[in-house]
Image (cartoon, rainbow, N blue to C red; front, side, top):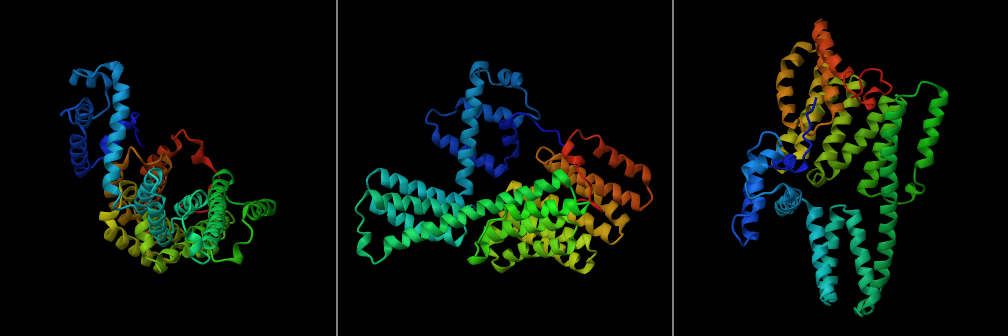
Amino acid sequence: MPNLQKDQLFILIKSLTKAEKRNFKLYASRSQSGGDSKFLRLFDALDRMSAYDEQLIIKKVASIEKKHIANLKRHLYKQILTSLRLIYIQKNIDIQIREQIDFARILYGKGMYMQSLRLLERIKQTAVDHHQDVLHLEILEFQKLIETRHVTYSRQVENKVERLLMESLQRSQITHDTNLLSALNIQMHGYYIQFGHIQTAEEEEKVKSFFNTHMPEGLDKRQLSFFEKANLFQSRMWYHYINSDWSKARENAGQWVNLFMEDPRLSKKDPDLYIRGLYYYLVFHFLTYRKEDFQHYLEHMERFIASSKEDLNDNSKMLACVYYNLSKLNYFLLNNQFEEGIAESQAIQEELAKYIDFMHEYRWALFDFKFAYLHFGTGDFEVALDYLNKIVLVKNCLLYTSPSPRDRG
């Protein structure tokens, strides 16, 4: 199980790659006119530590006093995040759009509102192309603010203002419904965590009523946006999963995955959501014993992760590691390849160890359960019990909800 460090700054520094550390040093050196600074010496001290020790920091860095260390740590934390933002701005389209909105606000603040409007118009299309609905709405609201407060000559262009108002109204509706659907997605997942699978007709009616009550109205009257569809398919998937209808849940997970198949650019934009979708699609192939389809999509997941490795951030790499290895273990279980699964277990555990400070204990418990399942399949009951005892000893009530018929994915 994970052994989480308590100091956030220390965890952040330990998560940095060599390239990120080098970039931070260059950034910090350029921003500091006085040469070597206290926060750089603090960075070096923390980087060399194997475990966080404030007394050792004070001892190693003589110029740092205990009363100043809290403020110095906050400053260092901010500087590291700023340097990381400069790296990832080219990889994250939402950061790029936000930067352009910030530039537009600066121009507006200097009275250059026509330049601000032109910049907003350009970046708006980028937001549309990449399904950045909330940022799209923010741009529209900023455009409306400028139009209401200044003479922009927009009335000289036929229906320009009217189109802006209509676009804002439509985008507000999309954002509103996306919010409701994402809430429904979370609520259905939470419903399963709290109540598990239905056992009676009364429970079936209760979850049906809950689902229908929280479903936004009028979704069938217009073309849904990408994230509206993604949250709708996930919500339906959880609904059918709670009802133990694996086939319909598999169909919904397939719709979720197909959103990315239809527009491969989106898998680069949000690889976490795509990998998660592939994982649940595989789970339902596992639960319905569809061996050939399971192997096909497992290989697809493997190829996608391998081809995207350079573009994945640390969180995406962790999720890819977790979901791919869980799926790989499910493959061995599905095909009764217990010995082969056990042979892979050591390598999987070594790979997971890289994320020991970041993975939730529930995910560790899932792996332990599958390792136990593999050893049970070979008749090695003592080792299977060792893995199961690790789960039982976890002091977390979230791990003790109603079990599903096989395993919980």
